Image 1 (cartoon, rainbow, N blue to C red):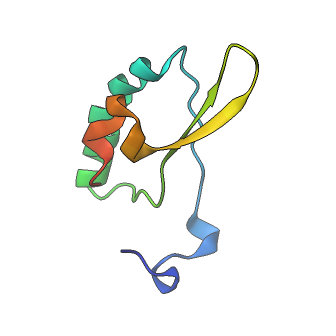
Image 2: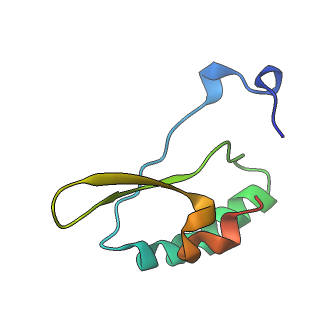
Length: 74
């Protein structure tokens, strides 16, 4: 677990990726996992925001998105 003492707010950046569907997120897993493994980035949190056909927005944690299974332990 990362404590707030380990993270400088000046160094935190956000990455937003838009895909046509949740399954498309699977293509992001290998490159992100490689960046974490090489210590180029550190992932603090992951979430998926999905807009339904009715326009409603739902937030899902990475644990509930099967296409992101490879990132659950980074």
